[in-house]
Amino acid sequence: MNQVFVRPERCMGCRSCEIGCAVQHSKDKNLFSAVLQSPPPKKRLFVEQAEGIKMPVICRHCEDAPCLRACISGCLYKDEKGFVRRRKERCIGCWTCIMVCPFGVITRDKDARIAVKCDRCHKLDVPACVNACPTGALVLKDVDELSADKRKKVLLQAAMGEA
Image (tube, rainbow, N blue to C red; front, top):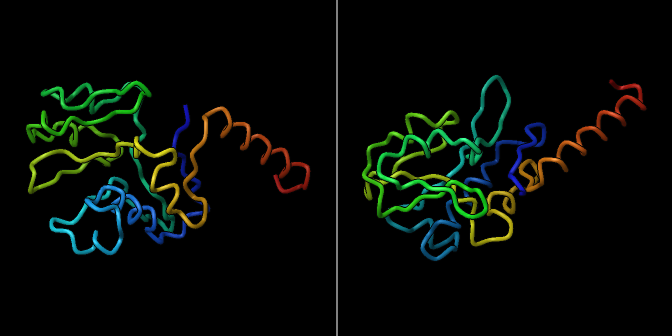
């Protein structure tokens, strides 16, 4: 299963991923109408900065998801692909999922009084955040493929005397 991974060394903090996410979750899926939408569409990932490092923080759709276990209304569930999804009609606004998320990526829609989290753009082949990233800081890859890429990079660095 492909996951969205972050390559922090490539992130320049432009927030294009946040904008792409919000537009994808807007009514018209159009940047210009999303800007005027009321209430504005909610992003589901967050570009954070600490100690000079910029990086998008996204839902990991954990295998043993704390948010899923904590959800008392059955709003959160795992779909057939293994992604943690939300049934908004079942959300009661208890915010338990927000309290237990180790990444702080579940937020709330104050108007609708429901939890908001990444749905991995399940209707798209590639999530909007990945498509929107101009530097390739967000990539959609299989875990094993990502590990193989890292091993090759280490090998090349060692061969060039950079390790």
